Length: 253
View 1 (cartoon, rainbow, N blue to C red):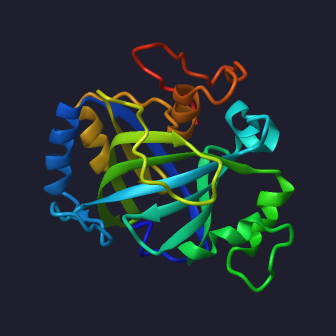
View 2 (cartoon, rainbow, N blue to C red):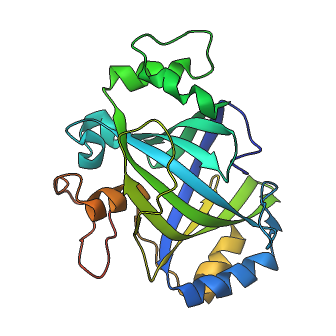
């Protein structure tokens, strides 16, 4: 389940559950996970189970992804970079019947300028991404960066993964490149906990939820960023939309 060591272009469907927890609870969950799960093989920081993630997110000029209009509400397109790597991942995250699947291709950082072209190159690994990028009239909207702690394990039903994402920061951008600007802090007093698994919720994660009295809630870093940066109009109201207050910008995925 390591996002950087798994280079398959198509990755299997999975379920994920998200929670917002305080930094104090996050620290306790981190200790809990370190005693039961192994570190992500890609971890590179001093703790042995963490790394920095920076992503560029895309939307239309009318913010159809943010507005969840039609098929735009089921997929997100982004470019993800781990640490200061000279390679990046072109990704499409697709939700179908409550399950997630991801398509991704690895390209050199310097090749991102190819997405500015009008004609996709079929012999480039990013051909499929570029073609959809043009067909959907997408453009860069914002950059989001955060620190992730990741712990994994293998069960009889397949791999499981626990992540804690801290200090997400966002900055608006219209460029096909990454910037050094830290941007605006999105969740100053909260940490995003995500549990990813296949099939039913693993016993280990059930135990975690019971021990820490966790209550799941939908949260999307992209939607947080757009709202916090004042980039898009308020999303279309529907039954799945969470309320947005000054204390918590928790928005649905």
